[in-house]
Image (cartoon, rainbow, N blue to C red; front, top):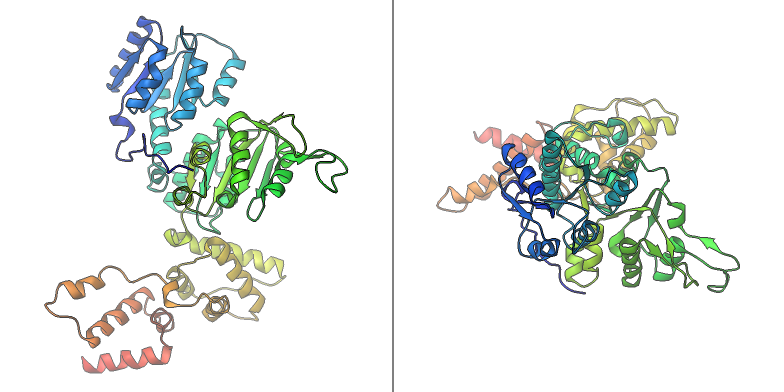
Length: 483
């Protein structure tokens, strides 16, 4: 396996600084639509009449979007669309043609086009399509834009995201991106730590895609190549011992819908080759068969692994990564969206209470403070487990913080490293003094910071510092006497 390439992958190269490429064999079309774009403020435009020059040009220079005619001499727009989508998947392609056929439009969208415009195109519609492609190029090119708040506001289809409880701006930005890419039916790669809700995101993409077929999940972790092939592609009678009849694979079950491949980063190299063929050609071979079958299922994959690191270690194919990573959704961990903790806490306590047939108790405000300083290595899945643990052990009255603290201890997760680290302000102790701080000065800073984070709650502050409440109280008393 080769190392990952960096061609056309400069995140400091936003779309508004890059040219739009117009490709058409008719000069008056190129002139007319160039004027339309320049009038709309999009002045960086390159035009090409010879379709044979397109791919060499893309190899030398980056573009924010390509507007492509279909009927051209030398090389057709269909051929160019396929080549651009394969070689430069981050560059959005708009088809602009005189062919007004629904079948052709569907074919082009399936082949990777982001829009299909029929000539003559109304000016505002053309400009809107190009600007939308430019925005999409930024999001494809720089996945960090998903969590930077680049897409403001709440999603337009809130019901599709109802299972993901959040009021976080980064999450709303992700939802808006999903709405933009769901209908293209191209592969999506979902990344994020264990327990952040990647499967819920896959369900939202599937729901918004408008496909009629089902969403079929497959956990690929721990599957060797034979198990993966049998589960995904099925087998023919006699393919192996015990195969006494034909069996259809999950890819067939996902026909007309979505195949969700979870934990894709753990896939064996042999299975990666077969998945690559499926993505490139939409073809697969059931075990024991030398006759290929066609699949129209959309592929969504997820992983908690760093795939670029896996590529560098030669454990994941670079070409498969680019095939899967046409669209990329990164789900941030819970420690980066603490405003969601009260929502999740209320929801899971209510859910646990119903399951256990108990009355849901109230909890002290200090519980939110405690949980907001915890790093949640298990993310949303962990807070759900906490709530079920709390309801199972709760007898009566207000739900105590100690139930949550005991859960963390029982899981072997309780340590100061599991709480959020001190801010960089601690550096000022060293930078603003000509000498090191004394033990007393450092202790005073740590206690002050812990009490600030705990909103004055000594029990919570003691947890952050790895002390008992009694030990912290003694130190606080000593500090107050020395003042």
